[in-house]
Length: 411
Image 1: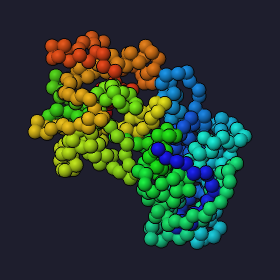
Image 2 (image 1 turned 90 degrees about the vertical axis):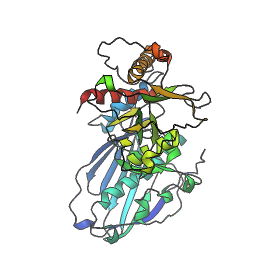
Image 3 (image 1 turned 135 degrees about the vertical axis):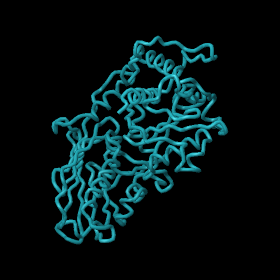
Image 4 (image 1 turned 45 degrees about the vertical axis):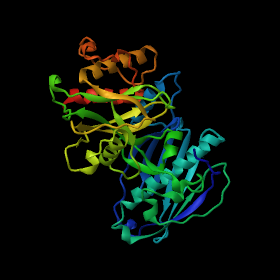
């Protein structure tokens, strides 16, 4: 749990390159992301202006339709300004060659801003600051040549007060605590994650609990744990190895007792996806070979990226496989997992499709239908597997959908 402090405006002193005015003008940059009930569309109309436009996501009926709507919004090529609920406008004043001033203003097309959206705008303003600073920093010759920059944030309908000062290297680091310590208690003790664009590029760093509270698009990893060999795109079906599946405990707050065929986790700020994968499989299953020997063959990938969007989780997932050898022992956390075991690839494939079919029948499936190549969905009961009634975690099924496409694409 975290406690929010009242939002304030603040000023921050940070250095950027004194040679920025001599560099080439920045080119137009477009990005799309997701936050709460909005799609976020970023642009750079000019070298000194950075704009985020917040478009409300269309309302949907109960179920997981919100995930499909969010994924569709990420693909939007153009947005209408008339559809915007809010506009965050960051302008850079370079009148003083030694001190740049960044002014962030919020324009509301909905009149008054309620408390929840005030907090959202406050967080997004702080992420926009980081995004704008990165664009400016790309104009510098070196970090050592930076001068001071005065940065101020103005939010409508909120009390003003408080001045903050920090170094540019702090702002552009993976732990810019000074941006959040005035609105979040104990911000310095919180793990940091990244809000990212639709293609997984970092927009800014934010305390990890905020990622989940505001359902920000962030980045993470997914991994198939394979027995004895890695799965490749062109591997014949008859030699596909078994996959390690597990069942969540019935005490889990989210998706109790559901199954998953993946190991997954959120990347911390600045953490390479491969390191995230190595760390997560060691933490969740006790398989530490990738951590102990990063250059070894325990981990394969990155294989591909996919985007998972649900009403509770939005993540750009980088996929890997882990090759589990016979002499490795799997140890899962009893508070997290109540069962785990090796399952044939065919049985995982069949049980996953049956689980998707049940979600589709209830109108709760946010993905698309998986092509089964007209193959009969038969579980190998001779092996003792009884997975036709397994319900998988919806997030995992969305990743499985992307996994199946990757296997078939051979691209």
